Image (cartoon, rainbow, N blue to C red; front, top):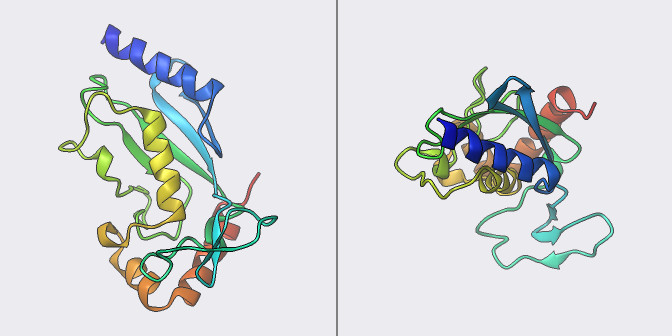
Length: 183
């Protein structure tokens, strides 16, 4: 367990001093290095009619896969999402458990009080000891930008994303305003 604590402390120090974009991390309880609180700002990337806009000040550029895989419109923008990251005592040999504490309308996050997320790297059969929390947090942000419809945990939301994107976008924006407004 001492090696686990050392690795966790090193990763925590790295992430708090040099956090991934739009991410803030701290211990949920200073006496417990195994439970982290993560604040994730909704990404700034958005799409407008198949054009990618990295920020409001840039001109749109045609995205080569716009028809196959849509980039997040502005649904999650302006939101701040609270996540809980629980590290097992045998980390890094077992993956962490990540859950959204903030409700989110998204095909890859369960729409219940658990807020579980579909993220392949966190599955026991895919987790490898060299993996790091920084990579996990970057992947979470990437999933917010580009939902993984093929591996959705909320089938109805994924179907809505594919079949009625306008209504999906409206619903997602409403949930951001209701549950994830920055405070």
